[in-house]
Amino acid sequence: MLREQFRLVILLLFTNNLLSQNQGQEILFVGHAFGSHKIVDNKIDPNLNIFLQREHDSLFNKIVLGGDFIYDCISDVEYQNFIDLLNKYDINFVIGNHENCNRIISLSYEKYGDINFYEKINNKLLIYLNTSIEEDNVEFDHLDYIINLVNKESPKEVLIFTHQLIYSKNDFDIRVNSRKYYKYGNNLFDKIFQEFYGGEITFHFFAGDIGAFSYTPYAFYESDENFKYYATGIGNKNNNKGILINIDNQININFVDLDSSKKEPLIKYNKFAVQLYQSPKLILFHIKDNFIFILTFITLLVMYI
Image 1 (cartoon, helix red, strand yellow):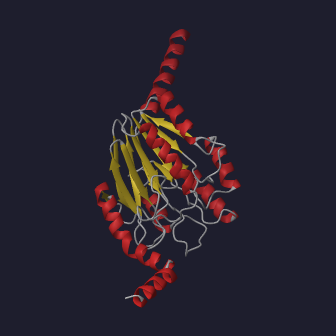
Image 2 (image 1 turned 45 degrees about the vertical axis):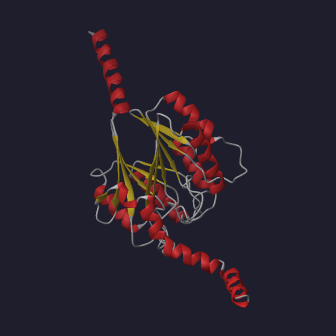
Image 3 (image 1 turned 180 degrees about the vertical axis):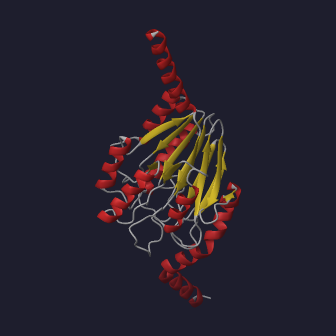
């Protein structure tokens, strides 16, 4: 009798473990979650907070924050508010410019075991990377980390989460909130591209360094062979978008409006649409930034006509 009960317990433990490994997951990805730079409230964006309370367990059961979820890393009040948020929801995060500080780095080690970590859902490998790193930092090789994980886990698809849009090299491609730390990220992406582009494994790149200012992109999507690129960010006070990632036997990805909860197709924010949207203010910015040079050029042109 005891032997049969023991066998039953072992069977249940094995079955539960198997189910936990194969269970699907619905993820909400959001970038720049602290919201507007003009509002210092020591909390995440109020529109995002309302969305989390309204739609948790309905549209998603896990949250991934794509960096810049804290405005002031020194603020004890804001740090405690973030701890409360972590205790309330199932959250993973990657480090952005604003929280690239000792207390958030220590929190990442405490919660995830490192500042770079991963999980596997079914045959999908989810990799969380800290790419807020100076260009000359060679203490950690992200490429080796990714290659070793792919060899170890043999996934059919890989989802890489970063703060920086490591696949974007200039603002005329995609205008981001800040180009800080981008040299490291761009160099890393070039190595990933050389190693995996055109292969059998589909790579999904998610980033959160957009959407903080007016006329900067707030949602982005592009597909190129086996590489898929996504980005989203809030804070511009007009457009609040997130990304819903449904991971089961297949991956289903949509943008979601945080105000209306309406799902939106990826193609709506394709690269052409994003570049068209960002162009007016980007052109004006560069004219203003190079005003003296342009004025001198026009003056010389007029003199010699």
